[in-house]
Length: 407
Ligand SMILES: Cc1cc2nc3c(=O)[nH]c(=O)nc-3n(C[C@H](O)[C@H](O)[C@H](O)COP(=O)(O)OP(=O)(O)OC[C@H]3O[C@@H](n4cnc5c(N)ncnc54)[C@H](O)[C@@H]3O)c2cc1C
Image (tube, rainbow, N blue to C red; front, side, top):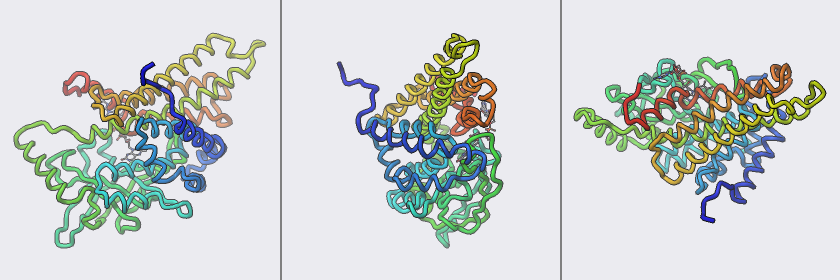
């Protein structure tokens, strides 16, 4: 036998079982309540913080797991518990990754711990990129950051939307335009520290699913942040902009660094979708075994059993794509066929399909809020939308495999 294995090692299994315990004992029983309340489940985030499941240390450990499977394994178990509560727990990670990817060591050390707070005083963070007129088309972003040299401050103005934890976060990471001539190459990310005047929450959205996760607009009205809040620092930004201007002037195509980051982060969203899909499948399997019609369990009918066979096959296939992409990211393999996007596309579409099949298998019960598969189906609709819609994933894959500028 060679070295190849798809088995988790003993440490990973122990961590997985620990997360699973929290998901089963704490998240599951609270899921319906927080879905109805449509509020951030602070007490549950706090419980997670108390046991170390909501902490920078824990996510850093999983992130640096040398097999690459730490994060997908964590996401799958948490989202198996409940997607809305899980997003409230892992939403901060999106902002933290924004700082880890672009910040200096000093910025990482200063801001990332503040994003989580501590077990007695938990905090969340928000990553604000999307705007009302810049969703899939990130390059059309309008929020401006202008440097006030005299004061060494950046002044931010604009409206962000769809921000997970927007307005309730301690630290907001805001992407803004510093050079409008350069499209997405003229963007930079800023820390907006807790309590900064001028940042306020706009509309809070009432959503179809993941209702325990707070999603809102963030309004930036002459928000002034110190120069050291520019992620990566001014010298690096100036160098990057100068390079981009030179290349734009020479007509040279610029490789989009953000795309590589997305390829590495999208499998994590795929893993969330696998978690929700698995939860619905397991529920439907048990239900089909217990429920009797025509004098026999409904699973005795091929019409039902084959649906479950397809569900399980697709979930396992989705997980394998997620694991492959996560391994590639950790091993530094190039995503020549956009394998990260592939995993997110397939897993998110699978979650939507599988949760709909679960409703069908539960019949009338599946259609009510007395049973969890209805909520799982609503929750699953987010996976084909955020972190790039399914259409955008297909666009990225099509461009990668064809080498053509497919539109
Ligand atoms: C619950 C929730 C949480 C979110 N959290 C965050 C967050 O924390 N931070 C953040 O910055 N953003 C967040 N988002 C925003 C999310 O990433 C965007 O909603 C997503 O990128 C899609 O943008 P849009 O909604 O403007 O849709 P649009 O871009 O307007 O797309 C509408 C439709 O057109 C299709 N479409 C667009 N362009 C093309 C094309 N070229 N080819 C084919 N089809 C196309 C899309 O696929 C889609 O079906 C969140 C969104 C939601 C709903």
